[in-house]
Every structure is written in C-alpha cells, then in structure tokens.
Amino acid sequence: MRAALSLLKQQEARRAAFTEMLERVAREADEKGWLTAEEVDAEIREIIAQAKSARTKGA
Image 1 (tube, rainbow, N blue to C red):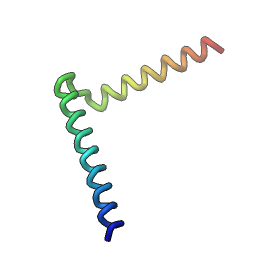
Image 2 (tube, rainbow, N blue to C red; image 1 turned 180 degrees about the vertical axis):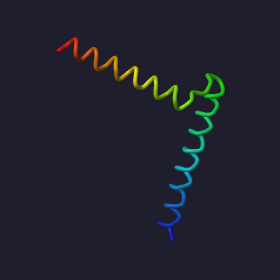
Image 3 (cartoon, rainbow, N blue to C red; image 1 turned 120 degrees about the vertical axis):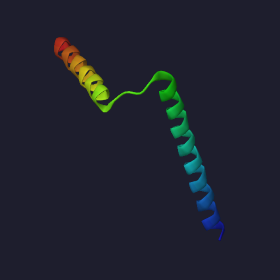
C-alpha cells in the first residue's frame, strides 16, 4: 500500500510539473509570439547551414 501511494505521489508531482511547464511556455508564447512549423524549420535549416559553412571554413 505504501509503495502504491508513493508511486501515486510521484506521478502527481510529475503531472503538476508538466502542467506548469506547459502553462509557462504558453504564457511565453503569448508574450513573445508564436512561430509556425515552417518558420521553425527555416530557422533550423539556416542554423545548420551556418554551422556547416563555419566547419568547412575551419577545416
């Protein structure tokens, strides 16, 4: 019984932390704005291209 209660408490703590993280991220997105998947993809591709270019120049 104690083990089950302990597991339940741990799970509840994880759920609460996850919920808080989602709420924090939503607030931040509301303040700073949202990005589309296409915008994120373009930014990631640019970062990768810059890293490859820097690595090629350094080699």
